Length: 182
Image 1 (cartoon, rainbow, N blue to C red):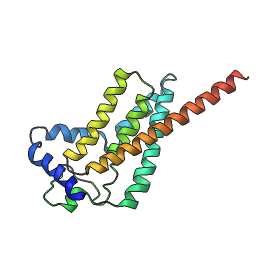
Image 2 (tube, rainbow, N blue to C red):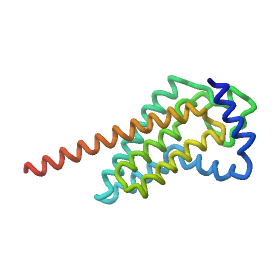
Image 3 (cartoon, rainbow, N blue to C red):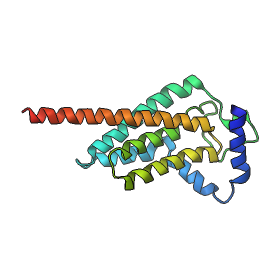
Image 4 (cartoon, helix red, strand yellow):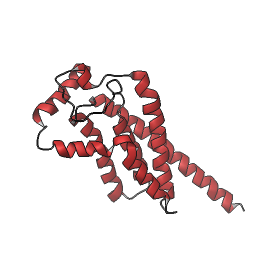
């Protein structure tokens, strides 16, 4: 499987890289450490109307971090594509050579943007999901993840966003019931 997936990354490297490198490097850095998504979640906490959205985004990111960064990456310890195939040239540095699966950038981006999309109109939710998809695909473009790493990050992000949304909705419902009974 690694060889097939490496061939996809090599194809990207040979046929797509060049003029768009700066753009895709910028996009990939949007997912660094989840800073952008964390900042978004914090900003949404400031207003009562958007507070549940912010809580959902931050809770989803917390779940995603615990599952991907604390648990799965260490357990799986999958080598990055450029470690397995030296003809793959990564466009970004500072990545651990044996923490490829699942993609933290993909997981965090999808966890945050799918959580956000549960609360907002489609005109905001769809671009948010497109942005998460671009961050995920950028990890292939820059040569630091396999397609299954991206897929794994997506699945974890999806589960985390769903769980966070359900928890926040449950707590809100319980609070409303408590207020109604007073």
